[in-house]
View 1 (cartoon, one colour):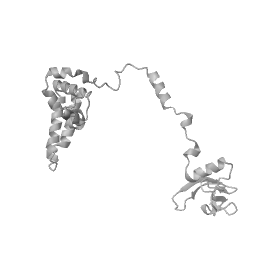
View 2 (tube, rainbow, N blue to C red):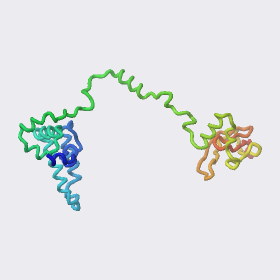
View 3 (cartoon, rainbow, N blue to C red):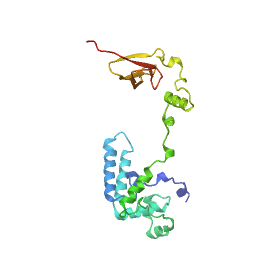
Length: 231
C-alpha cells in the first residue's frame, strides 16, 4: 500500500500523452501521430542518446495498446480509475478485481462540442456580430492612443494652452517672425519637417501660400513663397 501511495503520476504509463492524442482520438489519428513521432525518435537518428531505444519502445507499446480495441478499452478503464499502479500491473489483475474498482472510475471524457444541429444561420450571424461589436467604453480616445510629443500637445490643447508653448525653444527652429522659407511655383506644397534631433522622424504636411504655418508635430514655422520659373 505504501508503494502505491508514494508512486508519482509521472511514473505511470501515459500512452495518450506520448502520442499527442486523447480518449476521443480515432485509431487513424493515433496511427498517424505514432508515425510522426516514431520517425523523429528512431534510435538510428539518435545514436548518442542511451535512452533512445527505451523511448522508441514506449512509443511502440503505446501504439500497440491504443490501436487494439480490447487493450484500449482496458487501458481507458485503468486510466479513469485513477488507481496509482502501473498499467502493466493492472493488466495482470483478474476481471473481478477490476470490476470491484468501478466506484473509483470517472466518466469518459466528453467532446468539447455537442453533436451539431442545424443552426439558424441568421441567429449565428447576429450572435457573432453582437460578440464582436466593441462597446463605446472600449474605444480609446485620441489622447489615450497618443504618445510622447503628440500626447503632450493634446494635453496642452485640452487645458486651453498653446500646444507649442510646452516646447522649449531649442526643440524647434523657424519662428513666426523668422520662418523657414519654402519656394514653390504653386500656391501649396507638401513639406517634410525633420522633427527629431537624430533626423529619423519626418512629418509631412501641406503648406499653403500666405501666413507662416507650424509643423503639426514640433512647431517649427514654414512660409511658402511663390517662385516663378525662369523664361
